[in-house]
Length: 159
Image (cartoon, rainbow, N blue to C red):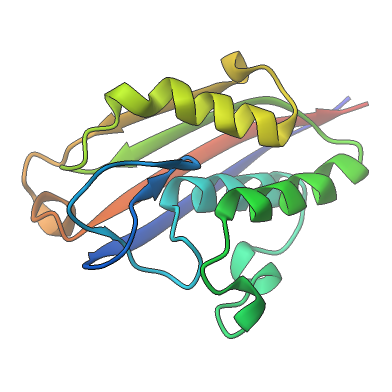
């Protein structure tokens, strides 16, 4: 059996007039995340982790911000495309573990929705997806509520 670990990290700053989408779920917040797509930092980190474990290039290569086709794109649609690449190579998801660093918004009420949404896209049981959040105790750009950092680790396997 071939077993591989992938890691992904993404950072987006907050911006006025944008929706705050995390894990494929719109979260009520006074500001959203700035990016070429919907800027779903959690999904972006997960995509890079899957791509890394499956030996593919990163999301910037697959979905460049210079391509208008991805302007305001739903990151879950892009995640599906990433997962299709990996699954065509025979990979299955053992688990994904995702952490957010954010002072706000609080995500606890939305974690189950996020896990369900991601599991639907990846075609797996939501128990294979864990999502956690922590603050930075008011330190750095995250502590000043200027943006969010997401980190993801996945374990993929194939016969």
